[in-house]
Image 1 (cartoon, rainbow, N blue to C red):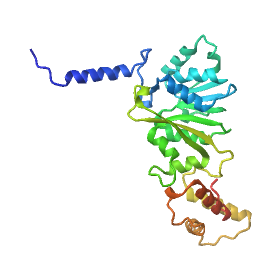
Image 2 (tube, rainbow, N blue to C red; image 1 turned 30 degrees about the vertical axis):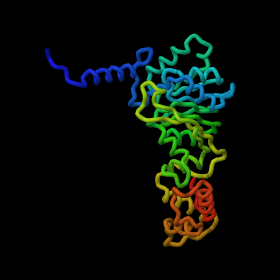
Image 3 (cartoon, helix red, strand yellow; image 1 turned 90 degrees about the vertical axis):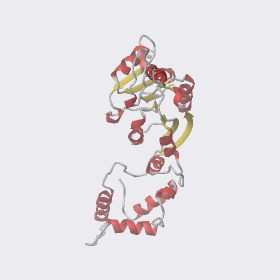
Image 4 (spheres, rainbow, N blue to C red; image 1 turned 120 degrees about the vertical axis):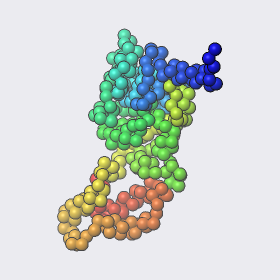
Amino acid sequence: MPKIKAGTSGRRRERLKQSRELKSAGGLTFNTGIGQHILKNPLVVNSIIDKAALRPTDVVLEVGPGTGNMTVKLLEKAKKVIACELDPRLVAELHKRVQGTPLASKLQVLVGDVLKTDLPFFDACVANLPYQISSPFVFKLLLHRPFFRCAVLMFQREFALRLVAKPGDKLYCRLSINTQLLARVDHLMKVGKNNFRPPPKVESSVVRIEPKNPPPPINFQSSAVQQLLEKNYRIHCSLHNIIIPEDFSIADKIQQILTSTGFSDKRARSMDIDDFIRLLHGFNAEGIHFS
């Protein structure tokens, strides 16, 4: 009789368990490579929706609706739900779930990559977001016009903590600064990995984002910052009949402003939002604008 290697049966059981976790009740295989981790705990779903404080007149944007666990609850609360889904299989599952019910007429599905989609008007965004698009989607949201009221979003725990980090925190970074300049950000609750099917490898958190209206006059979309600043400064000088020296250097001008405002020796991670606003005003007073 052949010998069975120790641990073989244990590994087989683990593979079978993982295979079952990848299957939905309808037999779908979830693609974790594009962030398909379905939120299965109805208590967590209800809590997220409650924290969005939806109104009966609201149009709600949902990204990554999956099999519709949250979508159905949103449809019960809101006037309309616009669900953006990349996977055609899940789109079919979503339509099947509301087919023949009064909720079907309130659902609009956009099929495709949300980052490449022109988003329509919405009042609130509620989503269990695919984690790999977290950063670009946050800034797509914050640059969206007209303004929305709030977004309640599920993120990977570390990303969520970066969003809400304060000056001096280990996780305080450019993401923290840029987001908090444009919005009020609050950490709402932690969500364990076992609340998802299949469970992700990381823990999660829910964050509420409320855009500031009006926003500060900053353009985050420019990739050549110094060239942008110099162009804007030259336009300002031309309009105000200010002579620019032949040896003008935008880098030297920036350093002069940093020195005069008292920020030349400060590290960005130690500055709060009021510091950045004062620095912005310092640049504006010298005719340098970021938009």
